[in-house]
Amino acid sequence: MSDGGVLLDIRGLRVRFPMRGRGPVCAVNGVDLTLRKGESLGIVGESGCGKSVTFSSVMRLVQSPPAVLEGEILLDGRDVMRMSGAELRRMRGKEIAMIFQEPMTSLNPVMRVGKQIIETLRLHESLSEKQAEEKALEYFQMVEIPDARSRFWCYPHQLSGGLRQRVMIAMALICNPRVLLADEPTTALDVTIQAQILELLGRLRRKNDMSVVLITHDLCVIAQLAERVAVFYAGRVVEEASAGELFANPMHPYTMGLLRCVPTMRTVSRRLDMIEGNIPDPACLPAGCAFHPRCPFAADVCREQAPEKRFFGERRFAACHRAGEVG
Ligand SMILES: Nc1ncnc2c1ncn2[C@@H]1O[C@H](COP(=O)(O)OP(=O)(O)O)[C@@H](O)[C@H]1O
Ligand SMILES: [Mg+2]
Image 1 (cartoon, rainbow, N blue to C red):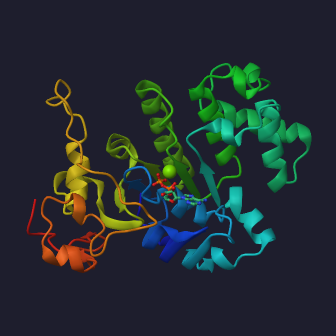
Image 2: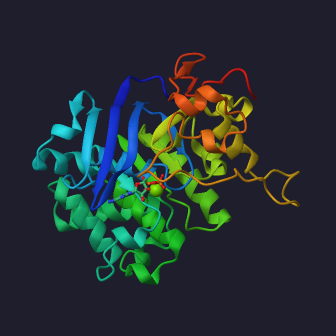
């Protein structure tokens, strides 16, 4: 469980992409987040809110230049932003691993999946081909790939989406990372397979005493796996709380809106509510609170001043002028 110290500490992260002939795209606008040992943190927000850019920055997968990154990303006290190429290669896979929505983008289509996982393993550990194969096969069984031995020598296209995601998870976990970043890992899958994969991730997290960051646009996914939740909007964390508190008592109008979009037994039969309007263009963010044009509670102050975080407990805040008054 999450009683450990801070493992990953993101402080004041800003990421912008300069654009030819117009203002920069401000994808991340001052994110502070901590991940503790063994914790499962859910990151939720509509598409385009800066979730992937934030965590790709943690992996240093955002190419800079052209991107401009500011702030600190501390992994056990070491700043990822200052790591050399060699340190980054050691960090990736061995300390932090990342999985994505579409395993086909990370898997090599012309190499058998077993071979790929063996190569990943041998990059980090000095094992013979035979030892690596044994261990890889063990991981195929651990992620519950049925008939693992024969699947091991398949090409990615010969596997279903669910099995490919299991292969990705095996590959991510094989070097025993302390942090797993899972970016929309089940978005491409149907609900039944999605639930199985989330359940598997939950079990592996406990078994390996690993911290997990689960990134999704879907609160139902959060409910299945996350203990804590950070809600992203326009490149900022607008609310943070334990999952229980967030679902029971959302403080930010954006979170309230997201929750109204979640289907329940009562709403399945009728049209779901949607948050009216769209997320703002990150090249041209509104003044004041970035959510104000869509917020049913917006007052003058919301149009003029960016809200500070209002705390309602340790690690429980909403960045909203009206937090605590409305709901
Ligand atoms: N390489 C890039 N160049 C320019 N804009 C980018 C780049 N990568 C992401 N963006 C923009 O940054 C914003 C945040 O993107 P992203 O983090 O992928 O959102 P999310 O993962 O929350 O859906 C989006 O507007 C996206 O178009
Ligand atoms: Mg994304």
